[in-house]
Length: 286
Image (cartoon, rainbow, N blue to C red):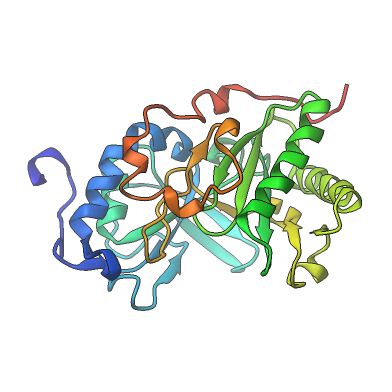
């Protein structure tokens, strides 16, 4: 494998998913095989990594800065972070070698921004994060996702759905240039308020986001610098789930997010999000 990439591999025998006895070599193999579907969504976007060098049984860490010793062929993007109150060199993943390098760092979870580095202040994706609080189930999340899709369809918006890789769903709208994060955040917030009127289990305000038995439409994920787990990224959970793009018709009661994992995703025949980035739309309702 070393002959095919610039990456110098380390600790390939390290067990990353103990329950499955999956080694780091298997994680790297997954990212190589899923790269044709994944790289397009990573292109020219700031990357934030969740790394687990000792496996998911040990504590991982969230890494915004490009790590020490970053190879010269790895692209970076420097910008001031308001939350960190300093400049940060972020990794940008435009090449397979960079994706392999991140996998070798045990960056299981790869997060992307909702804007590209060419126009960092202007989002090109609107992000609906639908997250349940117990005892609400994934079936409840599916119900709310379809309620949201119905409203978006009525207004002629094209929407795309994926599993979060955990307990929720992500719905994404690709949008044209010219909007700012305040506008996209408010757009999602208004839809959350509408859904809260339509369903007793939906909450649209952060103060209620942890109320038991509710589902929060998290509009705050549309703030500048916030990230979304990338399509086809692994998650640091016992069964090695993947945040998986789906066809809307795949969402049915009884579906379980853990069905989409490091083993099953590679068997899928097509990418339901193919063409997403070319489906730009205006947010104004005609």
